[in-house]
Amino acid sequence: DAKTTQPTSMDCAEGRAANLPCNHSTISGNEYVYWYRQIHSQGPQYIIHGLKNNETNEMASLIITEDRKSSTLILPHATLRDTAVYYCIVRVANQGAQKLVFGQGTRLTINP
Amino acid sequence: DVKVTQSSRYLVKRTGEKVFLECVQDMDHENMFWYRQDPGLGLRLIYFSYDVKMKEKGDIPEGYSVSREKKERFSLILESASTNQTSMYLCASSSPTIYEQYFGPGTRLTVT
Image 1 (cartoon, rainbow over the protein chains, first blue to last red):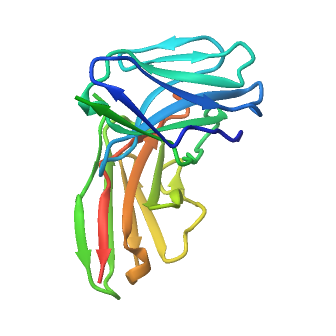
Image 2 (image 1 turned 120 degrees about the vertical axis):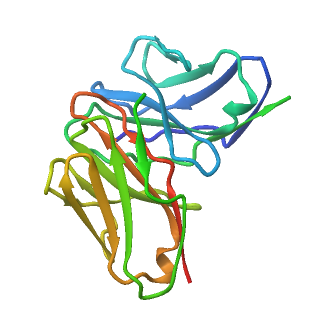
């Protein structure tokens, strides 16, 4: 799986959009970009994934650059409950049982 | 709403005790996983199962065993608990036809 690089920490004001970047310059053509988050003392939570097109769901939007070497997770109206560690993962689409490998992630703090 | 439940949120056991951690999912998923999460080490896969009665070792299976007698239930067994097994244990499930893993809330196990 390709390696990802994320900032260690970020701050965002409540109600504003939180934009979390991820670099994955060695991504392969068949690898997807996944985002998970982990709120303190809870299990990780899937947020969104994409291959090359931008994706949006009820939680977030995912913007992937045309060369696929980086992406941005957007939380459009951040709330205090969005304070968590956010993980960007690059991996081949599910082929049977595959483990998830989390890096250090970005610790996002939403401030009132 | 998809759900993965774990039998306990917090557990305290003594060295040498046999410990059972239970995980149940209600999504009819074929794949189930047990991870442990430690500060600075991220998620590490202990065991996974891709079908009833099937199991595969992950990266750190030593000191653990698993059981999957029914599709919805995956148990992690610590045959003789040791202090270095103090950790957060996370169960997850997934289907071969979807991309994401769904996690339970975690069990924080302390072995004294």
